[in-house]
Image (cartoon, rainbow, N blue to C red; front, side):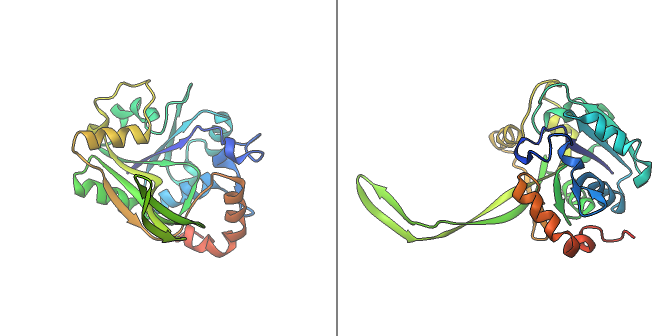
Amino acid sequence: MHAIILAGGKGVRLRPYTTRLPKPLVPIGDEFSILDIVLTQLSNKGFSGATLAIGYLGELIRSYVGDGSKWGMKIDYAVEEQPLGTIGPVLHLLDDLPEHFLVMNGDILTDLDYAELLGSHEDSGAPLTVATYQRSVKIDFGVLVTESGRIVEFSEKPTHHYRVSMGVYGMSRDTLAGYMPGTPLGFDELVLDLLDKETPPNSYDFDGYWLDIGRPDDYDRANAEFDDIRSTLLKGSP
């Protein structure tokens, strides 16, 4: 099993933490970085290799991770000279990848079983499998629906429920074969293309622990919770 870890972003929303460190290397707890946790989890689930798509401060990531032997994996690198979106960096790598592989953001904390997700994707025959998580948003106002100047529906402070992408995907080479390497390709564009072709992606619904380290508040929460969730995130590790 092989994973592509997207680690090339500038982490603008997480500044000032990312002024001198790429986001995947910001520390969590006293002894880990986000990337360290992700690689440990992948190794524990049987992934033998990973490709790190690097850009901003990428040499720091390369220096920290090396060849991956610390995690019992073989790790190589793809350098992103310009922003290519979520899927764009993968296009250069297709010839060297297995038929089915994992793509994931390098800045998430979750106890999702990556091997189970990839196995589910392979068994489904879907062009893409997206790990999804339910989020609830409470509206603090009375919500009105109007038509022709009249109120036709009213809800007092409703809560809306959505399934959102977790930033982890099961993917297949055939799905990306028609796209030109070197051109930007976002996750949103890929999903819309698949819907237009009437080949919809699968949803892999997950209800465990998931935190996207995107903002200082998220990062502070991850550190505050880490002692409580460490055993959950690092099951099978010493």
